[in-house]
Image 1 (tube, rainbow, N blue to C red):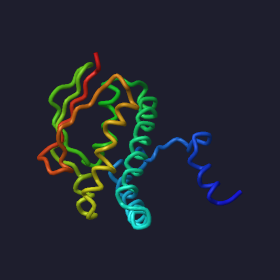
Image 2: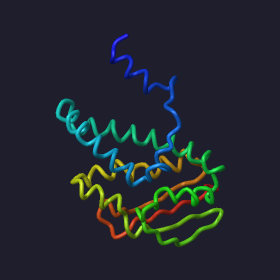
Image 3: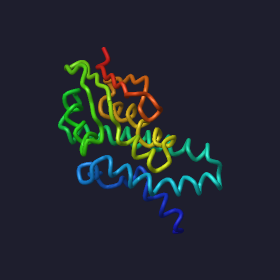
Length: 175
């Protein structure tokens, strides 16, 4: 069997990767930095060979798929998929003051908050890749909640990563 086939088999649906516990071990902010430092040179090299837009589209699709899968695993780790369980999971993303959050409303049906400081955006800016930071972090949010609980919707109209003064997260149980 060729090395190419071995690589393909490692990421196949038939052979899932072991459970991912890096967020608990490292914290999400550190994890995102490691991912970015590894992926950016790979994305740049692939972009040179195959076209940057095409490569970024594949990266975006892959990140969304992985985030959806991570959301499903997260709901299991949190012992349920209610908004309360999701609120408890925010500890991973706020660890090391990675996000500063102002909660507007929290109930069984609604979770609304603004992110007033985003160290993820600061990280990607410091690495000179702010435009890709949206793909690496912000794009995950919608897929993550879909995987966590498809009966919860997210509306967000702005992000710090894209230059807004805050990110507006509005989660709501679908009726």
